[in-house]
Length: 92
Ligand SMILES: [Zn+2]
Ligand SMILES: [Zn+2]
Image (cartoon, rainbow, N blue to C red):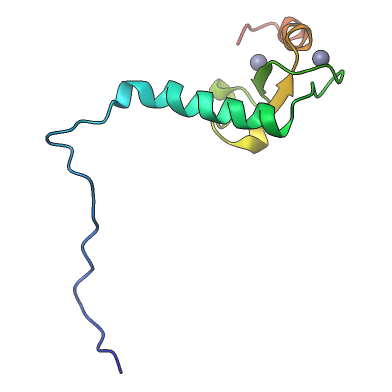
């Protein structure tokens, strides 16, 4: 029988003191990875079927859409992406 310990096991967190991770590059790093994965999973434009080059956010970030959620991403070709945003008045 294992005895239940009251102390919470210590989490092995990387020390941020010496080697500071490059947080500034985290967003673009993440985005390029996710963008790449999205285009690999869905290489064709969701609207017209041409090769997709743009990863578009279905729900805009400013409307509460998730930046990095695949459910909120759509592969589009550039003309369709431009068309989509020209239909909407705001230029997200
Ligand atoms: Zn298209
Ligand atoms: Zn877009």
